[in-house]
Length: 89
Image (cartoon, rainbow, N blue to C red; front, side, top):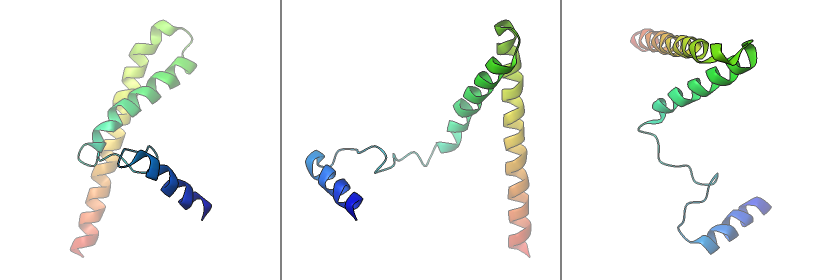
């Protein structure tokens, strides 16, 4: 109850301005594309920690980046197939 008052009180002072973490940004049309920088960041950080020398990081991060994208595409295809199979039954 107290948090609701805080949000109302805060939004009263800023008017119709965007309030982070309260109102989501309208990114529904292109949110799947945000998977690319997420996978790239995870691959670079993971390989930066695991590789013995930093000169190996770019190539190995690219390899794991591609494997992550292939895995996500395979998972999406499998889920779409299961959904189609369930709906048609």
